[in-house]
Length: 102
Ligand SMILES: [Zn+2]
Image: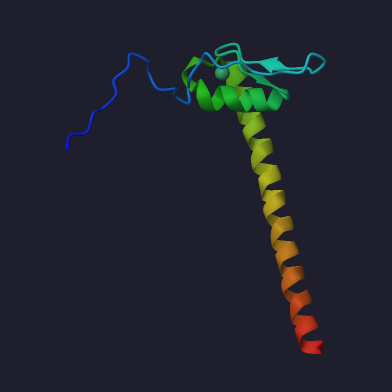
């Protein structure tokens, strides 16, 4: 039995498709990427996007903004890791005490 493969002239949708449309609420403030037009709710998210998706097209100010946003992101990630570790320790010893008493 032979298998037929459907051929089409259309290209499959790629994740980097630039023809995407974005549903931005009319009253929302959006920061649009000047390279691909993608909107972001926060300026730091736009700076991170520019650094990750358009690294070769940035000027010095945009590179500095990306580094600043990246450092802030690393800092809040470290804070989250510490809080998650603290919560796990509390849950572990809490359950241990419950097990010891019951
Ligand atoms: Zn972009």
